[in-house]
Image 1 (cartoon, one colour):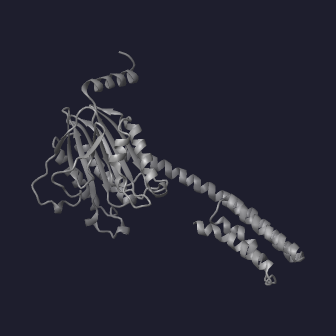
Image 2 (spheres, rainbow, N blue to C red):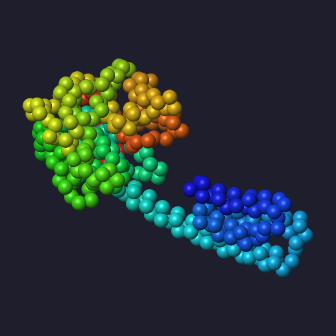
Length: 376
């Protein structure tokens, strides 16, 4: 697009060069008169007006320099002025219409994001929570990354996932997995069965025509979702089922460790590669004051100009004392500073979970009830 925007100005400069060279007998008036219309195809009103001004200026300068003022020059100059006015007007109308369409698309994207990736509550049961989603594509609101946190009778349950691919097919598969998770967490006591429901929903969605991205070859066998489901019960542990997803990071007393699975499992959609015994949730200590960060590979695979990956554990340790929202924002800023030109090449999602002690959780619940319902 930027190259196309330069074309009118290049042609104006070429016309000026011709008029100032020994080949000035070549007539450039009709070409210059058409420049504003050409500029209106790729630029807004200001760019179109600039190109029109350049075309008219070259016409006036060359006519004065060669003393060629006459009927033809006046006709070309009038034509350039009329085309300029029409082009600027048309460019403004097109820009207004495009902006209106873009605003409408943004509103739709925001509504879709609120359905697919709902804002996480500040606290659920014994944990404080903060979430962040960073879309790689400009103006994008949602993509193939997914997360959710829900309080159930079994404890606080959460999911973090990443759909292979991008675009609308990825959003569609993410919605299917999230929908299955939101339903299953409330009646399945086994965390593995919750994950199995997500896998079944993914298989059903992949079988629907249009669920596969034709740009990726249209192979349903290659559609998969890396996913991690975690549960924080009343006891001081966290249970994790990991299906090919980057391991969560546990922050304890300023130090970070990855909760690596002892028996790695393939992502959702690749169940044919499971050959071992049935999976079991893995438990890890999760005491008051501990923090758990769930994230997608868009965070840890972000690279700088030297092709180095983003050091997420070190970045967490540097800001370990911040509140959950502040910590995620600091990680966001560090990630942007690390990446080339401050741009992500893949969507990135983060979910930070703080384990509270019983007294802190009770105080938080009381404060929430007071602010919502007033004193009792």
